[in-house]
Image 1: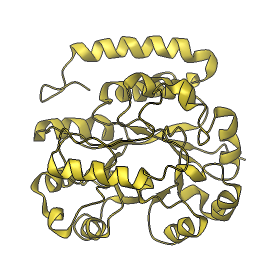
Image 2: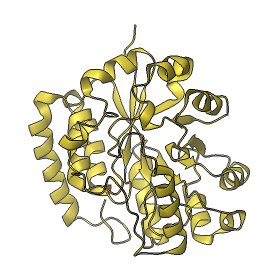
Image 3: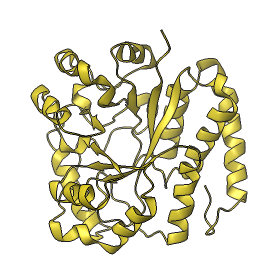
Length: 305
């Protein structure tokens, strides 16, 4: 039996651009240093200042040349860019936003993807940009079995599982027939069963929509350590030792959380999940060498990878 291809979805296509570019390059150059059968399935996130963005607030702006260069950086290597269009407070009037539609037109090449959670925007994208693969977002906070099954009956390319169901045997068994269309978030840092998670998403969405830089949310998880070692102690965490049992059941899409986290956290997660244990020191050195090179070499548009 041929070994399954396992797809990993990486965070921050803008914010962690240099780190992502280094990992993608090294997976091609040193495939034997990475875990067998692993591929980068997408890089997710947003261009700064896009009001359709949800999950985490990202302020700023990106010009056309920067958008073009970023898309080319990933797409030229066969890696889809996935937009986190999960702003949960959007209304129909917001779907006509000039900046977000510019991004969509520039990325409309049949390769790229969109995370969705609001019907008005989802319907608009299906109508105006049918070339994008649509993915049901974990920000919908569907945390019971029947709800996940209902999502899988729809024509989404993938459905991202709520992290509270990562180890729920009943749900995993029920959705196993659709396992190859389920994406599992392996390293969520949020508190298990957090009753404020949906409120937090709404607050972040409103802050993005209103460009409210100073908006804060009193998160019960805010005092927790942000390191990867602390994340490994969380109930929703899925270890390398456990990943194999998911793959055996047909789950082949795994998402690494990291938006809004320090780059050191994402760096450690990449080394842990993607790299063979005895090759981590070597790959870390090579990543550092590439990051230094990227800092010295500008991409078209004056930006770096």
